[in-house]
Image (cartoon, helix red, strand yellow):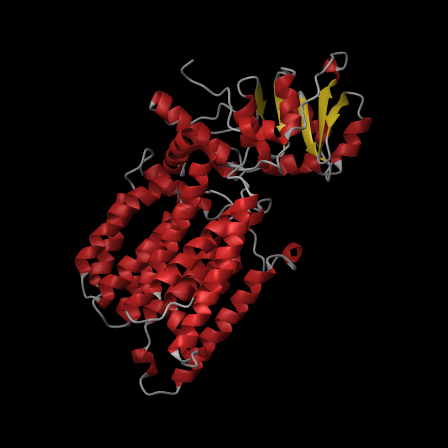
Length: 500
């Protein structure tokens, strides 16, 4: 039945990847970096897109940028969709191999995978992001470490310092990989097993982290970034301790509580046995505890906890709930799930195009600026800054984009937030010369700007308002089309070019 399980899992990945085809806000910055590298052979360490305060920066996602640009430039939307699906499925495939390391005859039940993945669907299926690489490498690290332990084969650990070079140049999440190796070192020490190979692997992997375009500065940046205050970035908030997210991500919260209760119950069942402490795998408990704690800290880390539970605690769950159904009924259950997923996937394929959508973006306002050749500094929410730069450079610079601490002074986002809340807009626009405003209508600043004599409302749609400096007031403007097919076809068109 493995074939049915893997086919169901693959169809499930295709289905959920197709349901949500939005594009990450920072993806446009990745495309710019990739295009620059392939045109010039260089990585910029300065920001050419902003009129705000910037500094020399370190791009910890430059490797991902090259991959994304190559795929988009050569294969378009369908290439990006297939890439997203393949890398997610590959990660889950590695996790099944981790499960089988404990028991090669383990029956793979799709229902548990469905429950786990559904709880983090917002984090893995929604869009193509650089952290997708971190999820895959996390699974590969966990498999390699566990394989070396179970098979008593420490030579495979030499893969990790090499993989670390790739991971470190694709995404800053490589630091979690280093922690994972360290936890194996500590865990095997507590298990009174041979921990030295893991210690050597950790040291060598730490050294290979220096193989990047920035050298040791990169390491300082990554570990310094862990202490930054990101109160304005949703994905860095805790869904457990932040009042604003009390009713947010309920599916993950249910999974989190359920997983911990079952895990504690499995411990309780065995804790009365003799030599419980000696028998338990301290490494496993350390990894679960670590991923649990970071998932409490930030929703960005939910995937690591869920994948750890799926990979390391699969047998714990089924030892509790396994009723040992007759094989024919057990197989029938998996076949029924496969048929349901197949029907859902086929129906979505018939009704969906393989299009990466920008429906949540201020596409009409950006098109208005471009179509009317309005030059000048553009103030726009940092979420949309990369998109605006991609579409409007070199005629327009943005105040800041989603790269946040990589490029900009730490206080800049607080100043931006003050403008949207209508607290400091006059002083802000006096300090930073601004010609164009694209504002989300949900913010208080929109009503204030409508009364400001220095600005006028030039265009608005259902979600966004576009204000121009009064110097443009007598100019006649063209109205952008509302044809979504036009925006889908032209979304990757850009004037960013260092050759022509």
